[in-house]
Length: 94
Length: 407
Image (cartoon, rainbow over the protein chains, first blue to last red):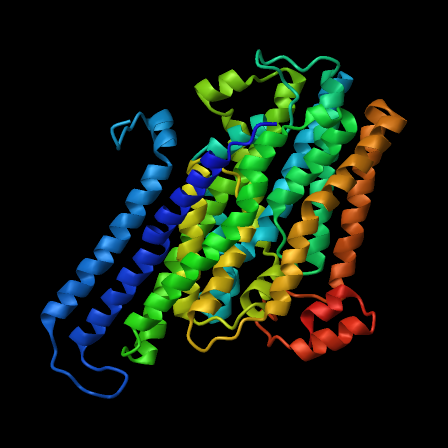
């Protein structure tokens, strides 16, 4: 029985790292987008009516777009072998 | 029809049945939080999840190859069966293992426990392998590095990531009007829950594909080399995808209830953070060929979302009950798998396999009928969770199904 603990540890760290970027980072970006969206629209929870801010709204949509793009890229990356196998698409250069 | 072919067909049918139980057992992993917060109507949620599971099944095969290599050692490096093992015995082992996995899955569903379908499957296979070949028939190194160790670190990583995600999300949106926040995060939830469904298809449907492939290898009609070069035969992918999708559509309402209402009271921002963490971890690890349990990851994430949200209460008692179910899943399914193999072997040949199959059907039917006595379905899946009643009832020796609903 040969168990390569170094390799397992490395795999765990990789999952943790990628998980933090995609699993916690993307929700945070989404939340930031929502905050800007709210700032851009008008009100906040404490009832203060701010001025409408179009830049904030644009920023919000940009952040949403980043989140969606990251998700699509992530899924394409996971499925790269299948895409290559069935459709001959090599999206990531390998 | 030759005896070997008959057994092969029996194995494939049983594998598909396992895949089906895998589907309804795990619907909750993806959809429990969306159903609990009302982001999706229960029926809509299971339909979306079913379709995405089917699509997911086609996306990747890394995990399936892991299953053919890293659990049982029935083939040598050259692709032949190991010495002293004939195709029939090899298929009987796989069959007994599947029966162990199915029975454990249905039992835990009856109890409303989100245990790991993958561990039930591996446990069954290991038990049957030990009974059939002995210590050398099991790939201990592969199991330890690809299954056991990940089983311990994955819920912890999931919990950590979900807690950080939840904390960030609440921190960033604390000044946003509550109504706007709920609506926004419901969309986020639908998106992330869909991703988890997709990830479940790529991860879990593949486990059954791997088992069917293993049976075909044992029968001699497929080799690992051909899988590596040409991928799995398309019919396997299609049938497995379909079975898991059907199971998902049926919805394991008992487990959805435990996950959505039992662990923590979930708000949409939490739900989104939990699902995002699950999706990221499952997709990452399945592309690395690690056979992670979707259930462990999803449960860890939901717990984490409770830890990360300021002021939330986590029902650690429910979490503890789940964790103990996780620990006994592999040994319990293994014992059933081993017993099934001994029974098959004692009766011998096709008759032995048919008897075990009949027992499986009878036991599954019995547990299903038992579940009807205290039904959990789309209509009452979100009823309030009552800890006090649940505890009191379980003391007075009522059936587990009754304590589960706790009304």
